[in-house]
Length: 170
Ligand code: 4NP
Image (cartoon, rainbow, N blue to C red):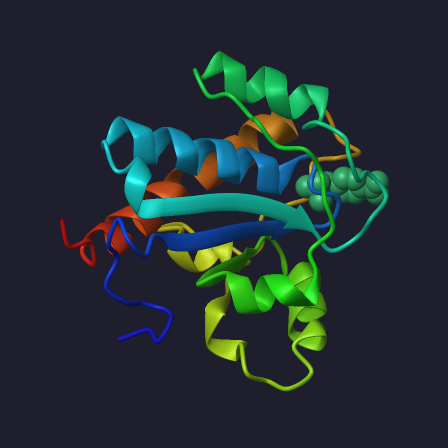
């Protein structure tokens, strides 16, 4: 069993943080999707959901307008306000999900003691079609790249929630 897994109760909600570079495209989309799926399943009291970036370029900004347009088209709202991922987040969260291998390595470097290795995972570990294992950065591309990111994250969030649901004790 993966060691980040534990019994999830209302008293001790499972804390997830989705992480990309800027915290304006990929991780806010993952956050919005996961919040939506959790609400749809009536499980909002069992999860604490957040997102952050490994870089600080966009701190304080809402999700990118193309990310918002794409998500809204699918009925998903993106509530994020960009922030930088900090060391304390490694202590705080149960599972930290990196969007690509660069974000993953940045998170592993932040974990200088190696205490948190087991809770830092790649988002596409949960994608039934993981391809090269990274969620591609859509920032410099067109709308179709944002739709591709949305579809990847929709599949990955679905699988992730199904895995975590098994550990909920009502
Ligand atoms: P994100 O996308 O990491 O998915 O939020 C990016 C956002 C901004 C930049 C790069 C990627 N940037 O270089 O400013």
